[in-house]
Image 1 (tube, helix red, strand yellow):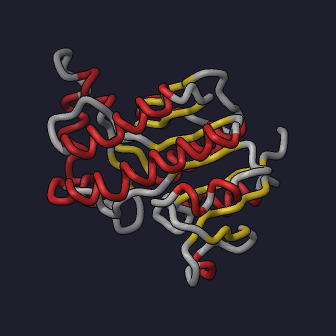
Image 2 (cartoon, rainbow, N blue to C red):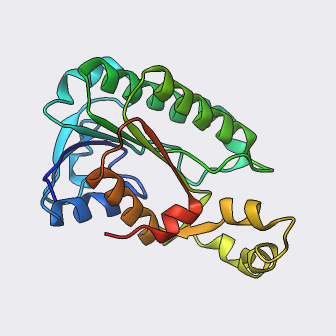
Length: 217
């Protein structure tokens, strides 16, 4: 396994707080973008980079010498009522990271998108699809992960839907959609992200829910 130099946006969030220690334990060098005054929120061993995830110019010159950028910025606890926040935070930060990575010639870009299509959260899906298109347009080597909901501490309410998922996965007419929109655990998501980082894509690779669940290190 080669040691990677990793630049993360969203390192103090739900997924970032779990991902950074895992990467450091595996010998990778991790730097994370944070606003001034939030450095202490980063896990131990991570080097803070001061900047604003919504403003490319505030961090584009700080990405190198990283070879991998991981974009994790997003609205906490996404829901249908947060459409405006999706466009003002998720979309703006996504574009900023993608454009910055392309500008400095980053070797591999890792983006957490969302399973699509889906019957709800249309703005959320649209924003993530726009960011995916931007990745394509910039011709980045990228891994795009598409979870639907990531179960973990403080993020467990969908567990009540598990009996329904069990049934829908066994009905021929709904098997595909039930698996594509299945629930993944935070640990599964972290393993999938580490695997993506340690095995850079040549071109664009899409990792759907079934692949997230089966990822291993």
